Length: 288
Image 1 (tube, helix red, strand yellow):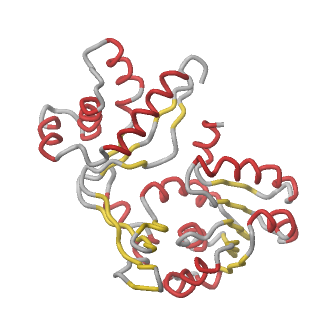
Image 2: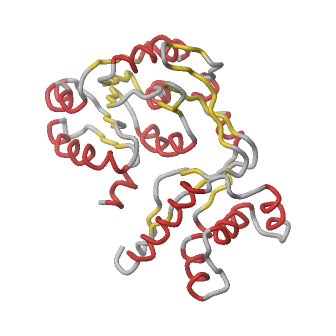
C-alpha cells in the first residue's frame, strides 16, 4: 500500500462515517434526478455520496479521490439473484419464537447502503470499500434476541463466503455455526462428503437444530460438536482426516484479527493436503 496510506485511510473513514451516520441518506428523488442525467445507478449513488460527505468533485483533490476510489466503491445489487440463492429459498422465517429469540425476516430499504463484500486491494495498493445497495426493499433471514439482531444471513455474508464454499471438498470442518449458511451451502455440493461444525454455544446449537437444520435438504451430511474451536483445532482436528477447514468465529475485523492470528499457526498440525479458508480473510490481511 506504499504511497496510498493516507488516501486509503481517508476513504475508509469516509465510508465508515457514511454507513454509520446516514446509510439511508440517499433519497429516491435525488437518485432518480442524478440518474436521469445519463449516468449508471452506481455512478449516481457515488455522486450523491460525495455530496453528502462534503467532497467537491470539481476540485482537483476531490476529482482525484473520486476517480481513484469513490466511483469504484458502489454496487447496485440484483435482488432476484439473491432470492435464487439455495439457502434463501429454503430458509424463510415467519416470526417463530424460541425463548428470548425470534426468527423473522429483516430488511434493507431501497437505496440503503451497507457493506457488501471484502475490501478490494488494487494492484498498485489502493484499498476500495465495497458498498452495496438495492433499488427495491430486500429481505433476509435473521434471528433476534430481545429485540436486537443476533444472527443474520446478509448479502455481505453470502458474497464473502462464495469463494470458500466454491473450493470446499471432501470431509469439511467449520468453526462457528451461526445460522448454518456455510454448512448448508457446502453440504449441497456433491464433492463434499460431510460437514462437521464446531460451536461452543449450546443455545446456538439448540436453536439451529430445532428451527433451521430440519429445513436443510442435505442434513444427513452435517454433524455438530459442542466445543471450543481453538481447543478442537489443537487436539481433535489433526486426527479427524479433514480435507477442508473454514473458520467463521468473528463478527468483523476488530474481533477477528486476534482469532485469525491465533488459528493460523495451528494449520501446521493438520495434514499438508488440508485446504484452509477464513471468513473476510482478504479484509483482515489488508488491516494486518
